[in-house]
Amino acid sequence: MTLLPVTVPASLVRRHGLDPEAHDWGMKAEHAVATPAGDTYVLSILWRHDRYPRDPAVPGFSERMITRYDADGNPVATAVPEQHSDGRVATVGWGNDANLAVLPDGSLAVSTRPGSTHLVSPGLDEVRAGWPMPTAGVLADGPAGDPFAASVAVTPGGRLLCTTSEYKVDNWAGAILNLVAVTEPGDVLAPGHKPRLRAIATLTSRTPRQTGADAQPHVVFGDAPVLGANRPSPSLAEALTELTGTHRSLYGYDRSFMTRPSALGDDLFVVPVYGHTFRSGSRGQEFSFALLDDRGTVRGRLGGLHLYQDSPFTGFDFTVVADPYRARAFHLNRYGLYAWTADGELRARLSTADKPFKPLVHFTLLDCTPAGELLLAHRKQHFVLRVPAPTDLADLPAAVETALSGIAKARNAAKKRYQPVNWLWAEETSTVHRL
Image 1 (tube, rainbow, N blue to C red):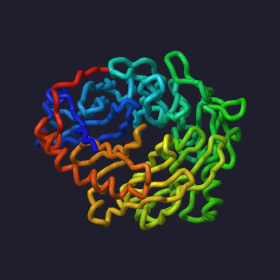
Image 2: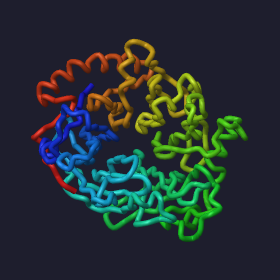
Image 3: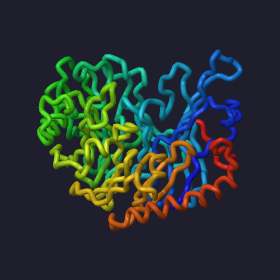
Image 4: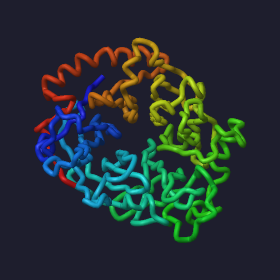
């Protein structure tokens, strides 16, 4: 197990006059990925709320950061993307649901919803290319800017597994995450080249209001851009409704949503889909982690979960991460850590009601490394754990228990090095790049 404090450049703390002992700031590790060589990239956001009454001397702010750690866990570089004062995308990373992917050439893809993607150099010192979609585009009537994808994941063979947003879906205003798409082998994302995305699944096919202006030319089904009826069929909502027998059910997949998919291999993916939420609470509502092949066929679901007892609606975290090199998937919510093989069979369930695994309620599962390690972020103490997952998933409980029991020693060593105040890990050693 390796513990990585989510560090903040001390120069950034001084720039904003941030007082770690105040109660007006917050921080979150949004995503993390690792390279085959063992380096780790952590995407985080730091903010301070405007005080009330407003104090011009202490303005609110938000800063996104991407920090690279070497294989020993030392921060070596931090990129701080600039943001326009009006909230539009300036260079990289500003949007919703920011996520990272390490491309085969080592470049870092940074994507945000509704559809911006930027390529950043491995050293975080240069934006190599960008296909931006202004954040204001979420509420627009049609595509704006030059979007690529809202999320990107990389398969072992180098294909890109992406999600893209569409306009005029159902009765929703603005852009809704609605398509799962892949690139063809050998077609790479690079400066000057935006590869074609082949749509393999649509969340819903109800798009009667779409016109030609809503098409994105690089997202195709057959020989034409996805638009109106030209899209994969049946939709994920229809397929899961059939699979679960929830037709016309209040708790079914009508007006459902999906989150970022993960790759179980070059031709098998996991797509989290969940039903609409209720003001009175949604625990017990339908959700599925659908197994989808690269031809768009739903092959089943990750099994063994109880709609109520294992509900990800508590804490509202539907993230599924996959290890495509070993063909297995993982999910963490407030009730446990779960592990499956690629056939959808549940092989491990670590309940947070059991004493050894109670600390897991404080963590968010971010991703899985090429070495098979789970990347877990502590929501309050702002550090990331790299936890090795054993080859035999039957040994996962022992491996996680060992990692959790070693946190105190590793955290104390980090505290001696960084001397955090209120879990703000300020540091002076990494090189800071403004993007």
